[in-house]
Amino acid sequence: MPASDLPICRTCGVQYGEPRPDCPICEDERQYVGWDGQQWTTMAGLAAEGHRGRVEEEGPDVIGIGTSPPTAIGQRALLVRTPEGNVLWDMVSYVDDDLVAQVKELGGLTAIAISHPHFYGSMIEWARAFDAPVYIHASDRQWVARPDDAVVFWEGDTHRLSEDLTLINAGVHFEGGQVLHSSAKNALFSGDILTVVQDRRWVSFMYSYPNFIPERPHVVRRALDLLEPYEFERVYGGWWKRVVYTDGTEAVRRSAERYLTFAEGR
Image (cartoon, rainbow, N blue to C red):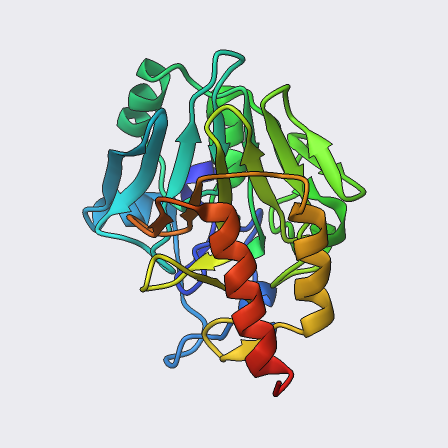
């Protein structure tokens, strides 16, 4: 089957390797099946509906990669530009030749890393377009909807992509939920593992966002312990302009303390 015809879930935006009646990612309690039942589209279908790539600066050497109009959950990815090669953090459903060309003009990709399964999008299409590996924590192996040799499953608490970039298995939202730290950019890329909330001085921690299931306190504490060695000024969340612009390390610490105070009834 041509890649342009592979099924993409309309609710979560994840592309599957073959047709199927259900989307296991949406049937999990952290997500949901659309109110009109399971519905599918394709890359060709998205293009026919008028979706196109959106490329805009989100920070210094950090370029947002998204879709206009947005698809599924509406997240945007981030092109993290470094002298050692660019990394695409998180993922979207849509890609076409024009979007690939724009990313190549920005230096292309040496790697892709994705925070959690709700953002897997069309990761294999992107991986093949740039001959780039996709780094996923091994704890989330079961959720990969289109198995491919491009996917690299790593284990443990941290994984260095380069001297500058480190993946951290925070484990919030999903057991394999990961964030990306850049020492050079003094930034944490968090997707919605640590989600930047509407008051962008804060983040929060949830097991399920659409179903409002809070994350367990011991999981939040583990994440804080793993992040303790890392300093960062900015926290880049999963949607356009969802960014903590200053004092990011302290923002995460005080957010966790506030969260735990309410979660534990203190």
